[in-house]
Structure formats: C-alpha cells, structure tokens
Length: 89
Image (cartoon, rainbow, N blue to C red; front, side):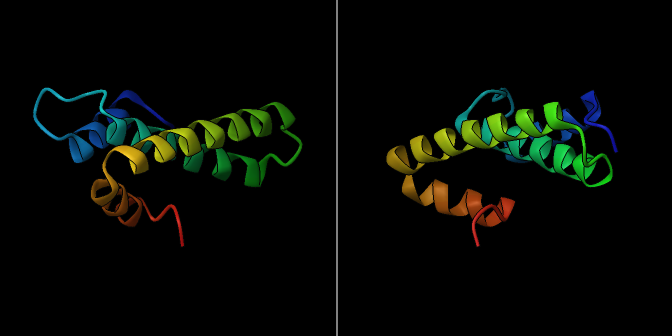
C-alpha cells in the first residue's frame, strides 16, 4: 500500500482535534509514523535501498523530536497518542 493522498487524509481525520485541524503535533506525529511504517515495509523487500534507509532514520529522528515536544507540552495527550500509535512498548 502506497502512501497516497487518501491515506494521508484518513490519518489526518483520525487524529485531528477539531474539523479544521490539519497540522497539530498529534497529526504530524501520526503522519510521520505512517510514513515510517510504509518505508520500513518497503525496506523489508528492498534490503539494499540505502537511500531509503537514510530517509527512514531522518523520519525516526523527526518523530522523536515531535514526541519529546508533545511530552513537554501535554503529557496526558502524549500518553494517549503513543498508546494509539503503538510507538513505545
């Protein structure tokens, strides 16, 4: 499954706080997580795609920074989001 416009819109509608929300921290984290899942599944079949692996590491770092920001600002929302996304074990 490719990361299409419909996939992105579905993630945004699932994690938005209100109907016009399209760029809150939770939505950004959910979108980056969706891209990470897509790229990691791609790398399972294409093991020598080193540029894709680099892009994956960049996205993981971006998600880490966004999660630490959300943890500082709203800890309850942070806990709820990581439980929904199953990011941390």
